[in-house]
Amino acid sequence: LLGFVYIASRIQKQEQLIEALDESQQQERKLSAIKEQFLANMSHEIRTPMNAVLGFTRLLQGQPLNEKSREYLGAIQSAGENLLDIINDILDISKIESGMMRLEPVSFSLRGSLHSLQTMFLPKAAEKRLSLSVLIDDNVPDILYGDALRLTQVLVNLINNAIKFTNEGAVTIRVGRIGGNDTFVRLLFTVKDTGIGIATDKLPHVFDRFNQAEANTTRKYGGTGLGLAIVKQLVELQHGSVAVESLPGKGSTFKVELPYTLGEVIPESGIDLYN
Ligand code: ADP
Image (cartoon, rainbow, N blue to C red; front, side):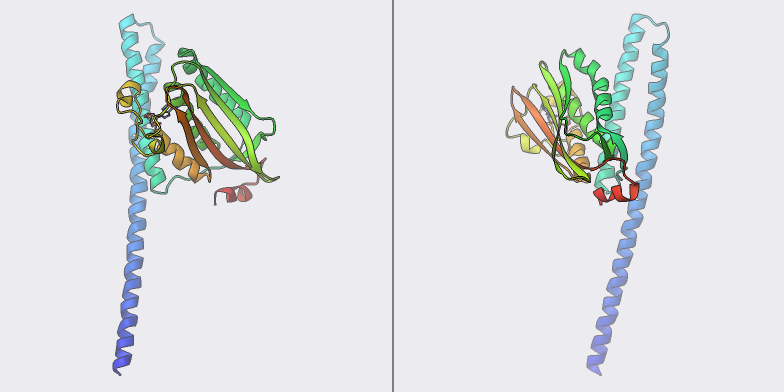
């Protein structure tokens, strides 16, 4: 009888444990949902007024203004854009870290995406008298299936840094094919600059959150130290990898390896790439 009571009480304890586990899982899910809702609300609540500020600033810039007003308006615009960048970075990193960043694969033209990127950055590079070239190897297929927006986000961060930390010379973006078969391809994206470079002891930490290689970099170049952390997380979410080589005073090279399904793919089969 005692044995029976003992076993019965063990079973009851286990059931209680399972119930408690269920409850804690439910709690966790509830908290996740609250966090997701909070992030979505925050993002909307902050972006909407900021976009209004920037929109009206642009409208005012089309009006006749004296020199001082135009200068102040320019300052408002660039501060607003900075703030929006910071907010987007913080929201992105929280979204990734809470596992809520969802990839959205589509069919896209790689050459088209890179051409748009080049067009977008040419004025910024020209301002610093830097050349900005895009080289795509002939054996790189053009129509791919994957998250084109997140690829653009990764490259925007890397090209932005390359231009920001380079005072003379060139920024070169290169794409090569490093593997695959007739259904998928592995590509290597290289963003190379002839800029200030990164000290060897800081190199292993550049992908850490809030990490800036030089203590005085923040004031001199601005930025949040979140860009490369986002790059690394986004690349890994897409089953890729990122690495950096750099020589202080000579320049840096960031290498991103990413897999893509080939061609126009029916969504169901293409999504497998990320699962
Ligand atoms: P930030 O917003 O400061 O640019 P990132 O995460 O993008 O943040 O970069 C982290 C740090 O790595 C930068 O502050 C800078 O010190 C260094 N870094 C990144 N890219 C480059 C580059 N192309 N050349 C030199 N230093 C770089």
